[in-house]
Length: 350
Ligand code: DAH
Image (cartoon, rainbow, N blue to C red; front, top):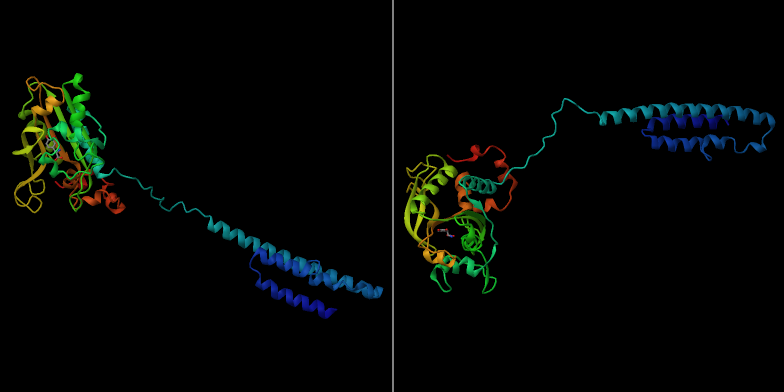
């Protein structure tokens, strides 16, 4: 009997060393004090013993039971302490650590350009109008003096839906709509920024891109008004020192038509790789609204005159922020977009 007790004591001392968690401790309790535990089993065969022996065994087993209980209690206490300590360490908040950075989004460079364009023209009294991207051939071409079969259609590779509908190739379609819808509200001063579509795709062309169209119709509007307006616009978008020049050109919806160049904002006009050593960069198409277009819009060209202009917003964005590939504007690469977190000026080439 004594041997058994000694054995239990030894085994317990050994087991206690190995316990590291509450779970292991619970197993140990079962092993020694459970119904079939080592200590409980000591007294399982008492009925065959004499009274003396029963007394002695009872005393001994009580002693060992107390001893085991006490040892396990101490062990429990120390394990609980350790576990609590560990938990506290894990949950410690180091108030001296810098706080987690909250990431701020930023406006897409393309949207910045649209907002700037709108701000400028709204400050000049223009309305900002919207038009559908799915347009009629009539609004996109015919009412702009480009009848069916006209060679000017070839220059704008069109996505046709059917013979009547297409994806607009130019925001000029908004001219035709505005004239019809606003005839009672003339004089008209409007811009229409938006998406247009052409069958084109390379580093400087995308099948979808942004344009802004402008239209003014009033009495006594002349080319001088157009020039003044576009000069101010170019300065606002590309810097105060920007110069503007008009070159004769052709568009079916304007007469006369001009192409508008701005002095190269990279070299200031001296000549560099961006302006191909010419000192000038082509920015806009414009002109005086063609009498046919006025007539189709319901205006008598003897009373009303107007100017119109149109420019690519992607091109403007690429110039302003020195972006080498138009696809950066559409692929939503976060590394590209994050560069615009900071102030506009830091990213501008001036
Ligand atoms: N719609 C023309 C284009 O996409 C740009 C344009 C040129 C618009 C002359 C105009 C204009 O209003 O008068 O190339």
